Length: 334
Ligand SMILES: Cc1cc2nc3c(=O)[nH]c(=O)nc-3n(C[C@H](O)[C@H](O)[C@H](O)COP(=O)(O)O)c2cc1C
Image (cartoon, rainbow, N blue to C red):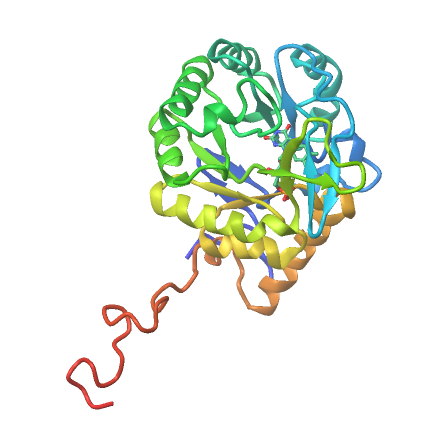
């Protein structure tokens, strides 16, 4: 049983241990869907969140891809933003002070086109007050260089993480792409290279076309699918990653409500990130937290840690004799 850190009958303890980090709760916002935090100030008291993961930061500012950059699909959103961001210097000078003032743990999502760029970003962010961790994005499908190219090959993924590990002592989270055959292999490689945790998933490579104009709906032609449509894929990825590594895993993909978030925790993810749902309901994260509290109260669970990883897999294949003998086939009477 987890220690009873602050739970009362009315208020279950939502705090989680995430490798070297202790978070007040397991609900974070996903990179690229919550700006730099201040964009949501009217809707969310950031102090309520477990952590804020900011928009992916590169060494220099980037304008991203030309429009159109967003397309809605049934149950999903395809984006080809192309990692538009203000760049490291403007982030530190103009964006971070607001987040620091809100006393919310800040995780900076970083990406580069080369190993050197990843290393330089990590070195300059290490030790900056307010930043509690780096999320290494090796999984963006919308950029021509770097991005997902690093995340689909175990040895390249390990090189990026190894470079960042050498440059920074901050806790490292590596964000994995689902656009691979064996996500567990990538997870193992990045953990061996020094990543403290992994988060998954980033978006699924996707495309949409218009039958009238006969053109792709995105100027970039391809983009990344997110939203409720990807949740089953994300759950499967988290499940496979949990089989491959023993470090903390952060579940991302299609989370819209407390039940969705709890599904990832049930598998064994120690925290979740909420992405596209922020665009639909900007208050969704606080609603998820409230829903989690109510669920735990209803289930009479005082600490969320006691729920994490409690998926019952004892009889997954009811007709497989090893796990669940079929009556009459094991010498016993039917
Ligand atoms: C508009 C948009 C921008 C995104 N930008 C980033 C980014 O800068 N870095 C990153 O690692 N992931 C980025 N993502 C991926 C999300 O963080 C998340 O992994 C993905 O959308 C799946 O979660 P969801 O289904 O809850 O949105 C972006 C997603 C969207 C929709």
